[in-house]
Each structure stands twice: as C-alpha cells, then as structure tokens.
Image (cartoon, rainbow, N blue to C red; front, side, top):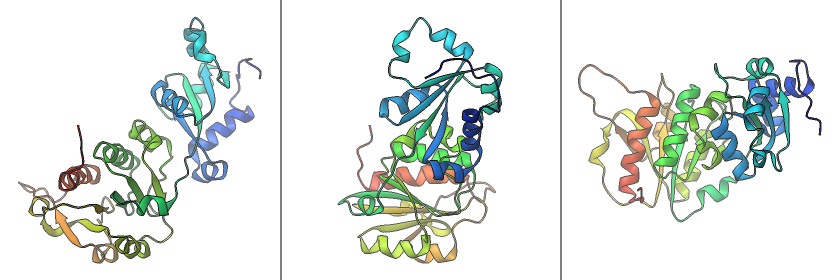
Length: 267
C-alpha cells in the first residue's frame, strides 16, 4: 500500500470516490457509500464497516504524533485541494471514507413480536430524509420502509443528516409500496397515516405492540392509495394560518406520540 500523496483529481481512486458521491447507481453496484468528517468516519470504523480512508495532507500531519490512529487502517493521503474537490461539504474536515452498505432482511424487520416502523412514500428532500432517520432512532423506531421514489438513503446529504443513525437503523426499499401495506397489516401492524383530514393525533390512545406510521411527500402528502390502507388517519393541530408542517417535523411529533402509546422506554 503506497502512501505517496494523490495530487490529481483524475486519479482512478479519486474518480471513483467522486462517482460514489454523485451516482446512486454506482453506490448500489459497488455496495459502498461515502462518509465525510471524523465523527462519521470513527463510527464506521468502530462498526467494522469502513473499507478505505482518504486523508488530506493537513489532516495527516495533524495525526502524525498519534500513530494509534493509523493501526489497521487502509488509507490514502490526498492533496488538500483534491479532497476539497471531491468532498460534498463546503468546509471538509480532511477525512473521508468508503463504507459497506448494510444488508437487512425484510422478513426479519416485520416478523418481530414488537415493531415500530416508519413507512416513507416519495420523501424527496435529502435533509428531510436524514432528519427522519435520525429522529426515528431517537424515538425507538425499529425500522424504516421506503418506496423507490424516495431520496437515495446513501446520498451524501442524507448520510450527513442522519448523524450516524444510518449505521444503526434497519431500512428496506420495497418494490411496490402499496402492495406491501396489506402484507404488513397481515403481520398484525396497526397503520397510522399523517393526513390533513385525520383526527387530532392526541385523540388516539392505547397500547400498541406493532405500529406503522405512514409519511408522504413534502408537497403532496400521502397518495390516496396509501391512505386507504391506514387504520387511522391522524393530523397535527395547528394555530394561525399554517396549513402544514415540514415532513421531518411532522414525522418527529407523530413518532414520539406513537412511542408514548407503545410505551417505548426512552430515557
């Protein structure tokens, strides 16, 4: 393994790193995604899913007196200017890594005795997607189901917005979201849908063992087909002239309310 400095953006490794940053197809084909920053890097390393590190010259110099950092690490040193070109952040921290995508089985996610799933339909904004994933972990959600029109869960902004939850929260992208909903109900899940015509979310109360929360597109909400499969439509009361909330904020409020009803132990 050479530790000479990579100084060209046209280096094959850097070109591939850039491809993984920009193209969902490349990520899926290679089973890899890219993380930036020391926090995301260290969490991936600790989880044993880090494949390779790319370290800027200045970051390398900072770590020279901490040799433990490099033990067992497969890495390349990259010119600061090249790291800046390939990084998705405006002010890169000088460390990036390729990470193996986790693989989850849908049957294991839905067949548990207790389950709390978030079901996302056409969530397009990467920031919303990442925030929902991060909040879902905090609220005790056991898994996330997405349809194929959602933002790619491994694109850089989504990954950053999860603040590490991407490593821990199981997810699955279903081929046919609408056909999946009755399958979920057959496994004993009660489905709640965020919907403007629903009852106030605090009108529902009871003990649930298996629950699914449907969240729809930022602009259009849930499709009628998805809403029709819900056992209960719920809305968030709003004062003033506000008609709706940001999808991630609405999801957060409803997740915590359902966690309360499910008596999930949240410290």
